[in-house]
Image 1 (tube, helix red, strand yellow):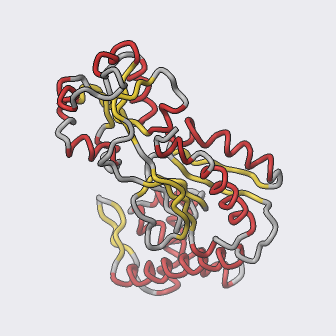
Image 2: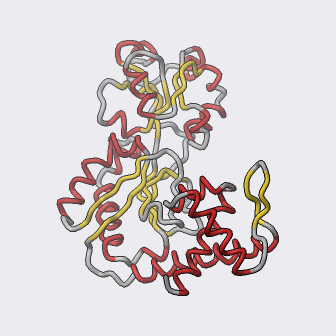
Amino acid sequence: MNVQGEYWRDLRTVLAVAKTGSLSAAARQLGISHPTVFRHVNQIEAKLEVKLFERNRDGYSPTPAGEAMVGLAEKFDRDLVVLERQLLGQELQPRGLVRITTTDTLLINFLSPIFADLQKCYPDIELEINCSNELVNLNRRDAEIAIRPSKNSPDNMVGRKISDLNVGIYGTVKDHRYLLDETGSLKDFELLKKLTWIGPDESLAHLHIYKWLQHHQLYPRVRTRHNSLLAVADAVRNGGGVAVLPCFMAAIDSSLLALKSPLDDFDNELWILTHPDLRNVGRIRACMDFLVQAISLKRPMLEGNY
């Protein structure tokens, strides 16, 4: 190993041990064996003639010298990520891997056919879809593109608002038709407070739907909670109660009866985002342009005006 390679190996080893607090966890992160990490740490300390870690029953904690080396390693790691983005920015042809993150609700009910069309349009682009209801870190390149419900674009990201993202209150045709008058409108909002509700659990407390239920004091009526809106919708279909759901889900599911849609006081948007360093990468730009156009055509579904 040359001097530069050994220097980077030393930094990575110290950073991994400091972040994980143990040799075994650091070994798993680095993809090497526990004895190898142990040997590397001893070699680094011997070479620098300084103690980098305190060993105790709770694991390894960095000394002041160790913290200084960790800070250097973190800066070096960040610089490598920035360099990688800059090099990627030189790519002009739409080919290669693109990682996209979105929610399970958007993917299953809405985006899957759009992704299929995208791949037909750009056969040299490979798609890797991260389906998660948790925020993925675009800064660390866990994904290059995010399609997310959000009220605002994060300050460190660039992208476009594609549409308002509205929701409604839905039940089943069989069980909840009596709540509507002859025009199909909800007879009385207060009736909803007497119904059995289905809703997101606390793992989805960041969702506007969760906050809306809390604001209107309807969350105490939630008798079944799920960590996925797909599961909430399925419970409604099967007669479990009523729920607040995105309008586009009902647009493609005739078994969901709109009791009130869209809600007047619900404020959310659909954004497509990427990191500023990636926006001019050929494959990223091609995917974002395609997705913005394709999703915009379905704006009436997203806004509940279908």
